[in-house]
Image 1: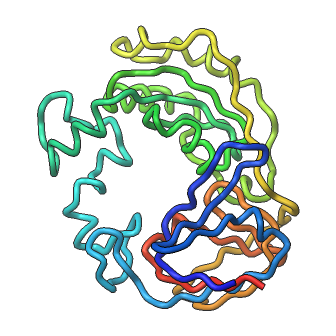
Image 2: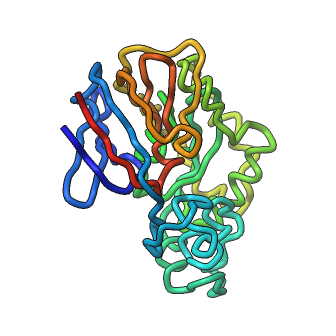
Amino acid sequence: MQYQGVLRKMQTELADPIQYYLIFDSDFLNLNQVLNKELTISFLKYQCLNCGEDRPIFRQGFCRTCFYEIPTAGDWIMRPELSTAHLDKEDRDLEYEKKVQLQPHIVYLANSSNIKVGVTRKSQVPTRWIDQGAHEAIEIVEVPNRYLAGITEVALKEHIGDKTNWRKMLTNDVDDEDLVEYRNKLKKYIPEEAAVYYIESNTETHLEFPVLQYPKKVKSLNLDKTPTYTGVLKGIKGQYLIFEDSTVFNVRGSEGYVVSLEVK
């Protein structure tokens, strides 16, 4: 089977285990169905996810020019506390910013390599947790805009981490934790503006990933340095493909790369 197209983050479906899909312009591949099969990935060219030009990808699937100009790459994406749409204040495109920022957001705890705090739109639960490779997660607050979620995250990360150790996540070097207990301990640190939105009574969400074999030590595939790679697919976790020889490939980190993909 041969596929070709520009890489975008894998689409997922909540199931046991989670189902993963690579979506191309005229085709798609359910990656769960090719576990234990040999895949060859070949880098062909770049294609910026905004302008479509063959320019080196800078960040988030965009060329440098687009990254610094388009509203979908504003600083508030990575730092939600910088959101200003609730003040009717524009960053790059107020209409777009209102559409994204002025909707319900969740501040959550997720355990992928360690317990971390994070922010996502309510509509992205549990997709965000899946993308981070979290095997358990729980909501802390549900607020009406991105700004409130952002200042809550900033306050809570003074007391708990906000980063994922991707190597630990991919080697499955993780422990089960009582996230309800952690959530309750953090309640007192929620900013006053967001305290009313605290979620008192909910339970952890548990996620099962389609991994047949976890590596003991990972080595990352970089298509700029290794344009063609062949390996046997042994698992999918977060936005990573895991291969038999302990190579891992970050699909989301390679957005905007046009590849051919051969399955044997």
